[in-house]
Amino acid sequence: LFSFAICLAFPSLNEGFGLPILEALVHGCPVVASNRSSLPEVGGDSVIYVSPYESSQWVEEIESLLHNHNLRRTLIDGGRARAKLFSWKRSAEVYINLMLNMNE
Image 1 (cartoon, rainbow, N blue to C red):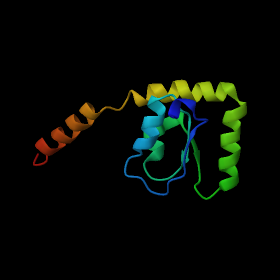
Image 2: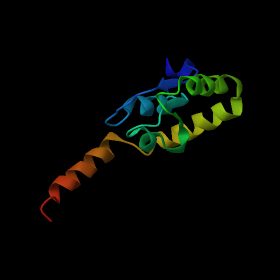
Image 3: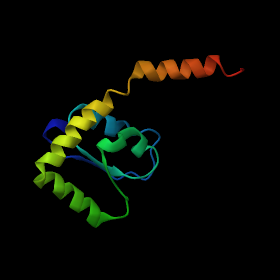
Image 4: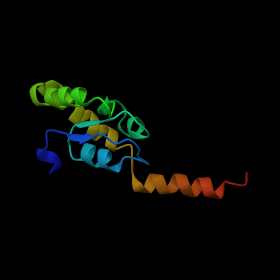
């Protein structure tokens, strides 16, 4: 579904991580997301961010992806590159190292 979508619109108010954004980026789906919580940290500069309270700006950004093929291509390419920065293995290694070094 992601590969055929105009974008993932993700107007979340609060996220622990933002896994749906990462899933979309992996599959080459541009993302328009809330500028709240962890989402900017996950998406970096490969996502368009909008206040979750600005509905007209959401419409504007989604429509821009329909008409601006260069923007769409930039977000797809950047998103795939951004997604490569994350892995379950690396996350586990970071947490294991933190737990092993808690008493230092």
